[in-house]
Image (cartoon, one colour):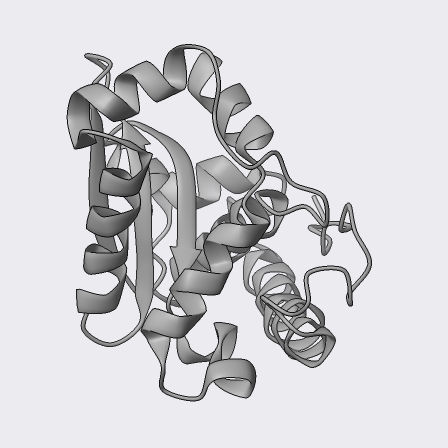
Length: 194
C-alpha cells in the first residue's frame, strides 16, 4: 500500500498568524512529505508493504517505526486545526476536562507545562484512557498513544523545532499560546465521542 501526504482541510496560509504559510510549506510540505517518502521506501519488500499505517506504527521498529510514527502523528496534528475553529468544547468532553483538570484553562496550563517541559523533540498528548479518565502524556521522538496502547488520542502538539522555529525561534511557550487559537474543538469532541 502506498502512503500519501494527506490533503489539508485549509489553505497553507489559513492558520496565520499562529502558524505561518512559510512554516506550513516546510513542516507539512517538506518534513511531513519526507516522512511519507521514507515510509514508502522502507516498507518496499517487507511484511508491511500492504499493511495499514496503524499496524506499521504498532508493530515496526527502528527507522520504519520512526517514519510511520511521524506520518501518523503529523496526520493527527494537522487534522486538529481549522482556519475557523470551534473555540471551546461542548457536550461530555468539557465535563471530563473539568473533572480531571478543573477547567479548560486548567487543561491548557497542564498541557502547556508538559509540552514546554518535554526535553528535546517529541509530542504532548491529551489521551482518554479506557476507564474514561483524561491524562496528559509526553512522548519522545515519534511516540504516540497508538504505539504505547495507553488510550485514545484526543489532541497533540508537535514540539519538534521544525514545527515552530521559523515563526517563534526557541520560544516554545509562545508557539503553544498561539497554537490553542487554531485547535478545532469539534474535531477533539468527535475523537472523544468515538
